[in-house]
Amino acid sequence: MILANTFREKLDRGEPTVGTHFLFADTDVPEIIGDTGMFDYAEYVAEYSAFDMRLLYELARSAQCGNNLPLMIKLDQEAQSFWSQVALGAGFKSVLFTDVRTPEDVDDCHRAIAPDTPNTGGLMGVKLRRPALGSYSMDGYLEDLESIVFAIMIEKNITVEGIDEVLERAKERGVALTQWGPADFSFSRGQMRLMGSPEIRQFEERVIAKSLEYGIRPRIEIGAVEQAKRYIDLGVRDFCIGWDRMIVRAAWMNLGEGMRKVLEGA
Image (cartoon, rainbow, N blue to C red; front, side, top):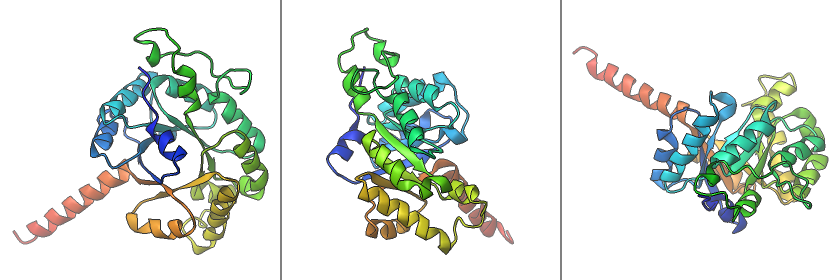
């Protein structure tokens, strides 16, 4: 069964969106996130996780049990075409492509998930995986593919240097969101300490401003609610907040430290 992409619907209405990240390969996680009713989607950060085709199916099913929570997937660059198509067949509703450097990279990402129809030039044919479980009808299949939220990382020095050309192509190809990547950006410049320093803000703000200039919504990743205001003042309305590994570790640290204090001198 093909379910509505409520993430796309919110973007189309011009509403702010809030997502959260998860890396645990546990099918309970997306259902729990969906059950909170607080998030518009969840991003499975597959680039930093371990997964297979079956897991993607089960994650998507679990998310749909959690108030039909749309899922985004973030993938390694090398096999993005294959795994993005697998994810869409499993029921994911968005793909975040990594390591985009040139306008031609944007074209490659677009081809991977765009329908193989005369007007789009995509490579995504009739791959009715989960949607074909009930029947082989293609009703709604094209419409569902066209609703996929296409997002790209802006995380390389070469990308920022040529940002106008990259974003011009991104606009042409229907990219909905950009995501700034300070870690890879710093790494690509050979300046590992740049991330987290005041000096990196000029590059971050340039990516945000340029994205808005080209009519593409800039999404920002944050770890705490208090961090959002600065970005809202810059025109950002789309956020992905928190990572499950860090949330769990912080909670365990808090519990452990609290109990150690209670037990001192007991």
